[in-house]
Length: 191
Length: 191
DNA sequence: CGGGCATTTGAGCAAGATCAAAATGGGTGG
DNA sequence: CCACCCATTTTGATCTTGCTCAAATGCCCG
Image 1 (tube, protein in one colour):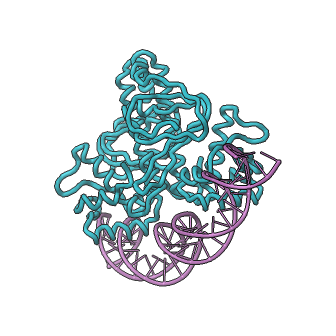
Image 2 (image 1 turned 30 degrees about the horizontal axis):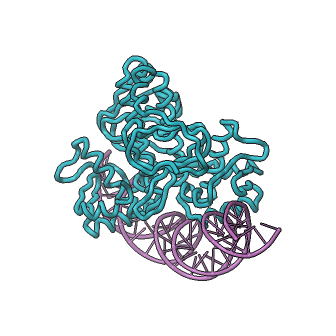
Image 3 (image 1 turned 120 degrees about the horizontal axis):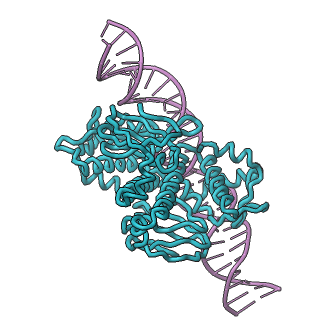
């Protein structure tokens, strides 16, 4: 719903809703690189480079605020604190990418899944989006699969297993964590 | 030979030699996140955050220049063009991470290997490190495996296959590309 | 009620892992 | 110059995880 393109200096702030950044392989398969949560930015790379080497799509309806990308260049000259914050944001994304890559490269399906659940939960908790009933989780099986380098069928089996064992409950668009200790133990592959 | 730590605001420039950034999983396996070529920086994340969430190790003897990480903070205030260049460097690393993650998540062993060979070759060509006999390639089989999410044994079989088919020659510490067209065709999984 | 999409499930398959052993192949000290 | 040592590469046999493909089920919404 948002963009799939390559060009432009558009920068957006997501006021509300979820999106994700992804790349397609030559065989059509998709790798989801990161999820964009409410309050985060889309297109920072474009503002810096003039091109985006990935695509962005929405997971839920988005409420976007457009920011003129040329302001980014100016920020470096006139608002150093803004520039520094942008740079930190970039570095935080890079850290998430490093962690996800490590999990995809080193871990089995169960560990990957637990990692994704834990990180999405924690990112939402930091923003106060978690309540006692859990938190939003608007991903379909296929999104989970494409984020973790698995197939939808196998993700489904693995989720069901976690459910059967009483670790998490993932129904429709909500996530509830039932056994935090066990979940973290399984996801510990990160740091 | 360099660092494995977590703290410090040290920033280094690699004058000569190769290094790599990596993370370890709980089971001891290693994911190589990126390679650091001559002329590049180590520890930019540390300079921005005060911590590094990955480790760095050398692949060949390194000649390092230490830079005071506090200068980075100052750069934002006083040398906007330097700050902007640092930010671009960070964004370039992020792009490489996105590409590598996509290949690991979506591609088979042969495609992953070709991708790595192509990207390391091209990065060296940009720096004029390639001659008619090929270019340096100081990675052991295990480094290739850990960068691509494979095992050393399987990397070896795949490299031998590429060699047998006359696509590349990887002996000791040098890489020679014999059939550029075929190699790129196999590596096309990127963009 | 019906169409379309997502989830679920099964059976069979295959790419790559695992484990261990054998073969290289430099580098080094004698 | 040679013999030895250690790391790396190479190879084989076997196994497992996760993939593939397809069918069945369920669900939402018009």
